[in-house]
Length: 316
Image (cartoon, rainbow, N blue to C red; front, side, top):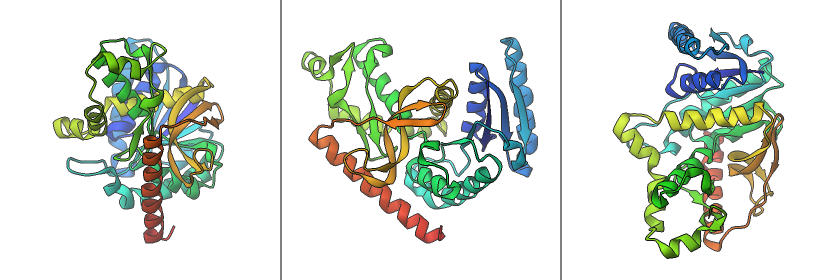
């Protein structure tokens, strides 16, 4: 059983991750860290969660706090704090204000929870992964962005619905940016072990429409209900649980690249990686179709430029 601390715990994502993790019953203690002016809300969230956990006979110690010292001995620290994306905004619009927040938290984690693994949920997540990595001084295998894990789950569901097949039969991934430059790896997607291209021949799957739907899923949700909630929260909780339980599952997460894939370096992007108790065990080398490779390079160029620009503006 592990200890998890959440920075930004009273936000939509933070509180949902806390509750989802508690219900998974793999965490013994969750610290819900908040600002001083939000501590009452954090306390209220904890009381509400305890009422629900009692109905399922789950015991998990939930601690509302505004003291960084309570992160001590955390196995994992999640950064979900920051300005949320609103309708009409792109994830990259959040880069500057959120970089300041993540940079500060990275330093605090290094001070109070130096042996932890940092999970980044703050957008733009690929940029923030690099900011947190450099601020904390941690090894890159211990700073992980939620990246394209959520996008991969979304693509999985889109395909499952189209073919009317149980989602467990869909094996697919999205890599690159968690944003407009995401790259669905349709060339290596399989359904029941059969390459997707054979299914396409027998159906009317519109690939451009599929990719457009995938890229705009977040915007669609935000335009209709104001924020994404359940999908990101479960994806993050699943990532954390995978690490805690040392599952060695392959998830597509954002990590700082150093020539592991297509000689891309000095930028954080979503790529498939084996995850265990020490964070990223290894990055999986992948084969891409020519067009997918071009799009991956575009993602690398865009995120690298934004990251360098933000670091220069904030002098970090």
